[in-house]
Image (cartoon, rainbow, N blue to C red; front, side, top):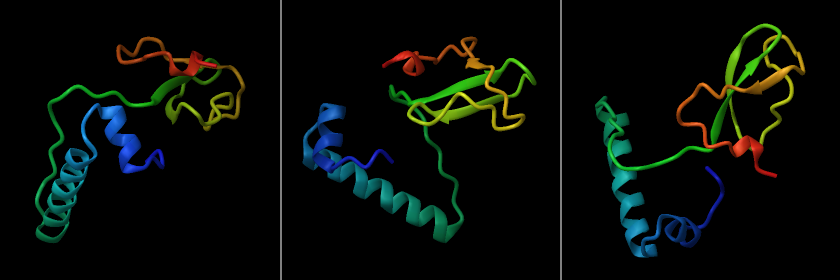
Amino acid sequence: MEGLTQEECAKKMEISRQTFQNIIESGRKKIAIALTQGKAIKIAGGHYTTRFCKFRCAKCGYIYTVKYEQDKIICPKCSSTEVMCNKKESFCKKWCCKK
């Protein structure tokens, strides 16, 4: 999703490149089985974070999620520029505040 190489991903996850490759292969197999056999995909466990933040429009109250690098200053519903981080979200890591 971020366009990283397997080596960069492994480094971020603090695992070897081979271990990362094994995880990818396992995931691809599970996805292929789910898609071709109509099975459910359950993602659970572990510690992970996302780089998505929730924002709230002060004008219309619309709450929306964007990737932190994307433009956050315009509400997608009413085009207002009065938007702010929806700090009520417990998972917010303030990526939107990093410069």
